[in-house]
Length: 242
Image (tube, rainbow, N blue to C red; front, top):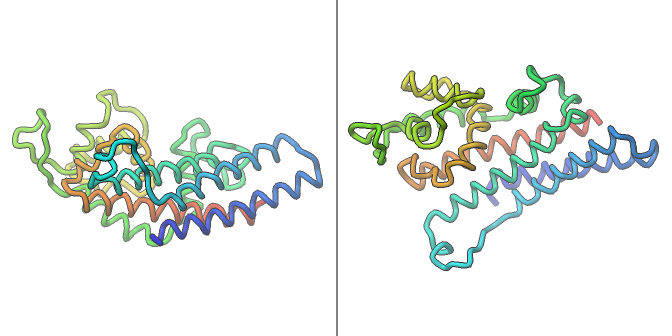
C-alpha cells in the first residue's frame, strides 16, 4: 500500500478511539453541546480519512475517461480533498480546535489550519518542501497569451491560470509575492497545502502546469504524505487531550 494511505488508516484508528472516549463521556455526563460538537467533528473526520485511505479507483460511464492516462492523478486529487475534508472537520469546530490552542485569527480558516499543522510538526516536511520548491521552480512550456515565449515556471503557470485578478487571502498573496520574486522558496509547507486545497478545486487540469505526468504525481504525493502525517499526529494529540 502507498505509505500515505497506510498513515491515513492509522490516523483513522486513532480518531475512532477518540470518538469512543467522547462517547464514554456522553454516557457518564449526558449529551452536552460541547460533547455533541466533539463527537460529530471526530466522526466526520474518521469517515473522510477512511474514504481517503481506502479509495482505490474511480469509474466513469464513458470508457474513454476510464482509459485516460491521467486517471491516477484525478484519484489522488480526490484523495487529497477527502483528507482535507477530514481535517476541516477538526479545525472548523472551536470545541475541538481549542484543545490545541488559539489561532492567530479566530475568523480566518488558514489560521485555524495552521494551528493544527504547527501542533503536529510532521516528520520529513523540510525534505519534502525542498522537492516541492524544485518542482514549482521548474520551467515549463505552456499556452499563455500573457507570455512572450510561453516558457514560465510551474509556479507562474499556476498563478496565471488559476488565481483571480483580485488577489486576497494569505496563500494567494504569498504566491503572488513568490511569482514577483521569481522563486517559490518563500512558500512554506502549510501555505502549499492550503493553496493546493484551492488549486485542486479551481484547477482540475492542474497537472498541465507541471509539464509532465510524473512531475504532478510527485508533487501531489509529497503533499499527501505530509497531510497524512498531520492527521496521524493530530489524532494522537487529540486522544491525549480528550
